Image (tube, rainbow, N blue to C red; front, top):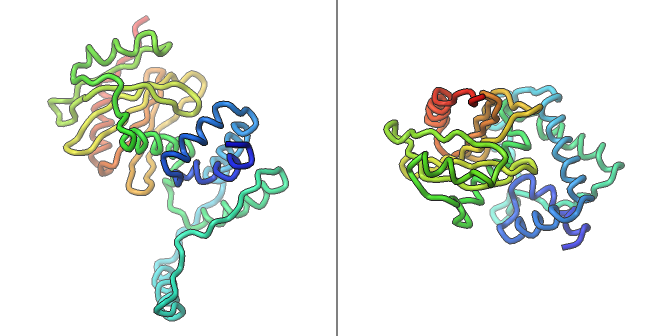
Length: 256
């Protein structure tokens, strides 16, 4: 993959629209190309600025009804309306103003809680871990097996809670990458659903406490005792909040 091909795929990559092969090829190119990584970081920063700074206005309740009615009138029986129209993205400074305007228009009617770039990346990691059957590097329900496994692989020791008696059994963990950093992914199960709990040092970039929802996935992020936590799952919001509250209650300050 060359830089021109990678530039066209950065947008779909951030939106989680690439298939597994294209996603892995794009990530491999980004890992080896500082120029394309800079473009990726620039687009992430742009999305974050627009999402955080642009005013949001709730669409009137009748708008969806009027749109559906209009489509029924205008659309012939044989006519199909594609869900997405492909459009080229040229990552130049002159194109950033147009991209910003487009993103602003897209966000005018978006609801609060539209996922951040970090949450989108976490959702992509969660989905990818299930698709490529790489959910676990260490499989164990014993916190005293999972926690020591990270020793020597990370420069910090993630806390691993045992929530089995509460209906959220620990099933293992793995190494993952989030925001260009190696992170611990502690994996829990709730019935047939999985929860990825990403943990890494907050340092000078604490997450704060936020909730996001996108495409049926729910994300909760927070900071406690000097560590960032981000939980992602297709579980419903209430169950994921119950899970995160139990994690918070078992999180203790690091020993001096």
